[in-house]
Image (cartoon, rainbow, N blue to C red; front, side):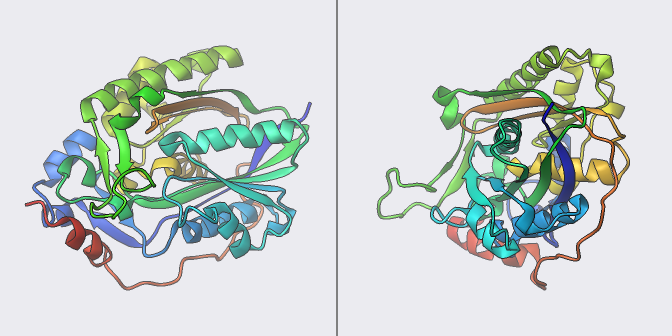
Length: 356
């Protein structure tokens, strides 16, 4: 049977760190308020664009798979913060890594985007339309941070993660998945001023809007219920789950989802304290770190779950293959920068005004 196995993994997080203490200088907040409500201690702020973050993560994933960029048939980039509307950020990545044989396109399902793209890659491989697919989740949400809104500006950060999927006769791969959307709830979590609608003179700055309590409730329900359903589709019981890798949006949402699934915290991967919410990048970054930390063994059953603006949600059950070590490594890295996170955010701060 033709399956799609993850054979490579990689991440790219920018060097500039925005701590909770830094945020205290920008808006009416403090470390205790942020930590107790979100679990976030710091997040990364990028000095480059989404395609640059993606290209570095991609090169690490390709090295882990023992492949070159010309081996790829398809590149899928999940993002809601692409460099430009046209060309797609995926085609920019294709050019930057030299994937001359690959088609490339962006996928926008907000924070659920990586799982949407993963399911597309899996189906393309199973159908015979591709042999090797690079799937990336990457965001530069710092571009939209409004420091007059303390409920959102403390949440988000930048980064990228990537995986390579290859056609294989090996048992495993994506055992089941579920994708969902509810457009009637789209305004509960959205980015204003980022498209063509309204505001033709661009007199209003862009920003992230979120109805926190409603998003929290919907997120816990959507992620928990979708995870339960995909486990049933895969024919697995809860005690057969080796690791849950959820979207890293809020530690309280992660904890509530784990309780809903009756999972011991030891079987839940959490890294939100270090990166905050990087939207479509959270799951591939977390997956990469889980492999690096030895949290994933050969044949492990992994549950992925996410929710995002749109309103979107997704869940998947993936059975890992036989290899958990990279075939080789890459020296790819971002261009150097000496700018601090606060210096990088100066244009945003000037645009929106300080929120104190």
